[in-house]
Length: 281
Image 1: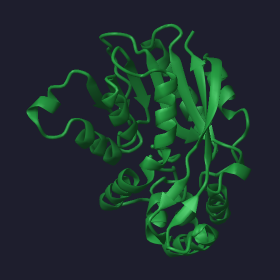
Image 2 (image 1 turned 45 degrees about the vertical axis):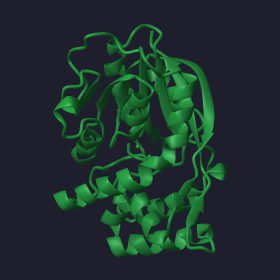
Image 3 (image 1 turned 120 degrees about the vertical axis):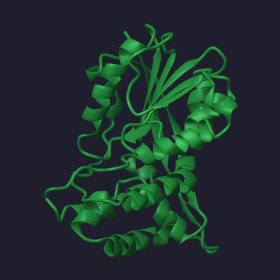
């Protein structure tokens, strides 16, 4: 699965070693990122991503959605500014070590919006779900406003948010993060997703809403340890760790996951994500 289920790193959440960030990026890439594959597939299919598509991915993470778009023949630019470790993994996936791969002109991976563009983008995606961290909508609004001039007029821009809490089993686990983080008033606050988050971001970025959809993206894990690693790799629990400690967070998240553990030891949490398609002016 991507940004970041939501955020890779939250401000004021305390220092983390390079090894910790690298391990967490690997957990994201190997465990969590794949959870959003149904969303990536639905959007690519709806927008007919393929040969002739010039796709700009904002918050591309470790690049799974880009790999899927590349398999459909799209030319790609991925931007990942929040996590150098995730960007490095995206480069491994898409460019590899071969001279032929490094020479590919249809894949570009960077930590900032490109200053130059040979041709305007025809699809823009921001697959990192917003609506759980206070302030994440403002950050995305600014990024979209900066990216809009790089796209053709009328280009579809895809924004993603969490679905209704009653249809997202992971909401119960996120409440643990919010409860623990609330013990530290200096941390970034989690908040419930709002119905019109995506439309509000589009409006503030100068985009015109033009359709939406919902996609079921269940979170399935081989065991409790994989579930803990996957969920913590999102960064949504950083503030909780800063307010308490890692052991406390692990313990309470494990308890919150108990209702979703099955008899064979796997963990299964149904979720729904919503996407909005907006158009550039």
